[in-house]
Image (cartoon, rainbow, N blue to C red; front, side):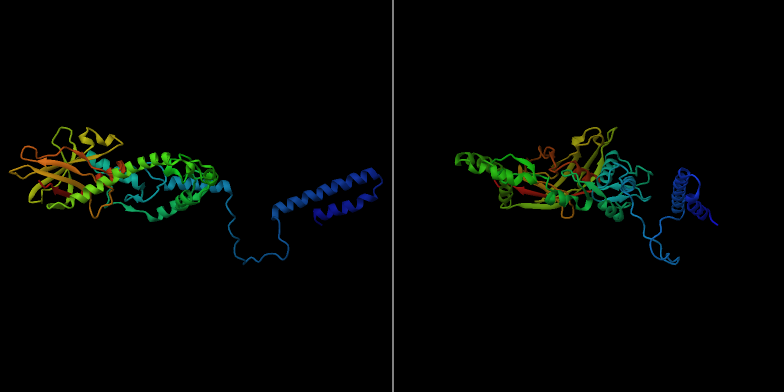
Length: 377
């Protein structure tokens, strides 16, 4: 007889005892004992489902959903695995890897190549010191897709979204995104969350401004528009010149002969408008250590190599080449070339920021397109 059955018999015999108080106490003790045994049995075999016992050949149960805390730890581990080895942040666009598999975001990869060009050294992976270049490294598409699915926080509403959909959410869907009044063009300075925009526009006072006030605002807008149009009108007028020449130019990197060598660029000689020319470029106006500066710029000069009998007055501008993605805002420069003044001053290459400059420095050569217009006398 099992211990459980013995306890049941004890419970049944308890009412026949001589002392009533003792009987009630025995019943209580027996009930507690039965409850304790039942709890022990549940701990040993677990809570069984109602109905027949499951078959041993039944497929295994599905995985239990990971608790929220463990999921957060998993994301943290993924962040540490997929982050860039240089900036230790998750890549926002392309991901490159060295021959040993260490990851670098596109910005850091380009920056490493630009630094190596400035220091005249071979670029290496910061983890394993193997050589890196655009030919040796390749993109890791699997990591790019994995990173795009990791959650990140919206800077406006603080909700979590996959990285792949965050940009669209912040631009089009987020009700807390910063927006401007539709009457901004006539001087309204209001900025605020998108969900407050209808209420503001109903109360905005700018639509009721007088004509005199609006004319002042439109005058400022016209001045800005005229500055933009002046460049295009100048280009259109230059295109009417009789003598126009253009060519593709390739800046190649060289080093000065100084004790501390400096990087500079120079093109092979080329012929435009029956004259021989050369272009030179330098980084940060040839400062001593441009690799230590976060802000990087390129400047260039046009040099006439031919001998001329009379002054040659020209306008010129550089544009991006047909196969490059660098963003250059065209600027027209003027110079009167002669045998004594055959070089222009160094003028800035009109690129948008240091990131674009690093792209050019990281490239093997810089390919641009030069236009020269001979001014008619």
